[in-house]
Image 1: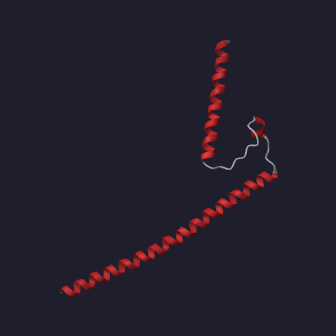
Image 2: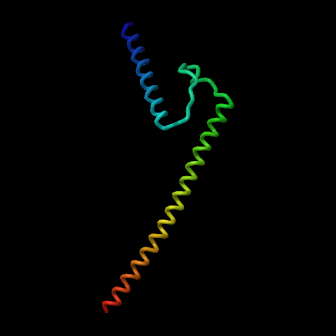
Amino acid sequence: MTTYGYRVEVSVQSLEKSLKERLSKLKQARMPLVFESNTVDSLTSRPSAQALNQRVLHHNSELTNFVSRDSRLMEEKMELCNTLGRLEEEIWRYRKRGAEQQS
């Protein structure tokens, strides 16, 4: 029976360690999870409508910022591609002039 009690203790310890690791990973991923307390009840209880609304608004804000940044990056990329095209065309002209002058 001592062995059985030991196994249960090891299982509880491994579960606690696993939960701590997963919570750490969630925090690193910047997932906006709000725990009102560290009890098991808070993990299984339903969040309020206001809390859900706040999460949705937060996610919407993050998504809007991401899309805004992405569109700015796309514009910058297009400008750089256009500039590169113009520069390649100028290089081609200079080389053509150089070849004509050497002839």
